[in-house]
Amino acid sequence: MEPLIQLTDISKIYGSGEAQIHALDRVTLSIQRGEFAAIIGHSGSGKSTLMNLLGCLDFPTQGAYLLDGKAVSGLDDRRLSRIRNQQIGFIFQSFNLVPGLSAQENVELPLLYRGIPRAQRSALAARALERVGLSQRTSHLPGQLSGGQQQRVAIARAIAGSPPVLLADEPTGNLDSSAGQQIMELLCGLWRQGRTLILITHDPVVAQTAPRIIRIQDGKIVRDSAAI
Ligand SMILES: Nc1ncnc2c1ncn2[C@@H]1O[C@H](COP(=O)(O)OP(=O)(O)OP(=O)(O)O)[C@@H](O)[C@H]1O
Ligand SMILES: [Mg+2]
Image (cartoon, rainbow, N blue to C red; front, side, top):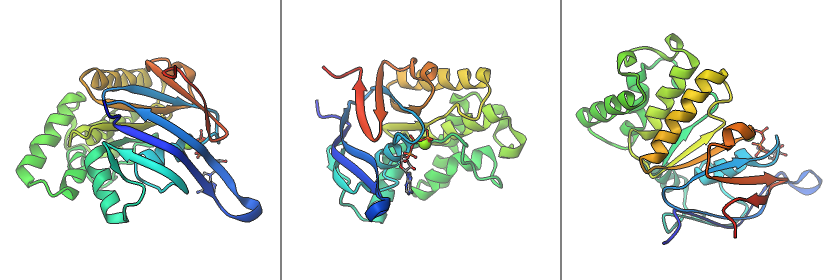
């Protein structure tokens, strides 16, 4: 079957001349629909750079990226942001919630950008908040929620529009171990329900929850447990 994600010879170079940094160096990687893969590596190895490319937040310097069979490497910003909005749910270390919006409004926001009508938006957001166990907190502002609860709002926001890919960059990085464990259980549950999950982490214990572990070092994939 055609992979959901196919990167071929992807490089990302920051800066120019003497100051050039090869943040990613000819990365080739495919991820199938329904997989749960952890991308692991030391600080500065290129994990966030890879996440930004996978999430269509940035462009590669060279190489090809096929998402669901479609080339995204050559698209303009407008098309790229539409693909991002429809195909990818993001979960960040620092939650990235809008402080002045309630949990419900934060979850509705990407659905609003997608042009989904109000009633449907509200129903989808309510369902996503229920899925993460926050039905009792929908009108709370982020500042009125614990870190773990804020991350659950962010997960609800990521899943509300049912994107095929969930991309999580150090989702437990700002949480204590018990809240972090709850977040990992939630993410694993979503994967078991059929979502494709890509988890970026420097924490080997967190990475062990994934059936596939991809190690990146100096911008190169140096080990992939799925590789033959
Ligand atoms: N916008 C940028 N401009 C220049 N260099 C950058 C930029 N972003 C990242 N880099 C460099 O690219 C390399 C990879 O960075 P990246 O942020 O992908 O690492 P990381 O694996 O996510 O690290 P961490 O675990 O600390 O988050 C590093 O050497 C970094 O300094
Ligand atoms: Mg990073």
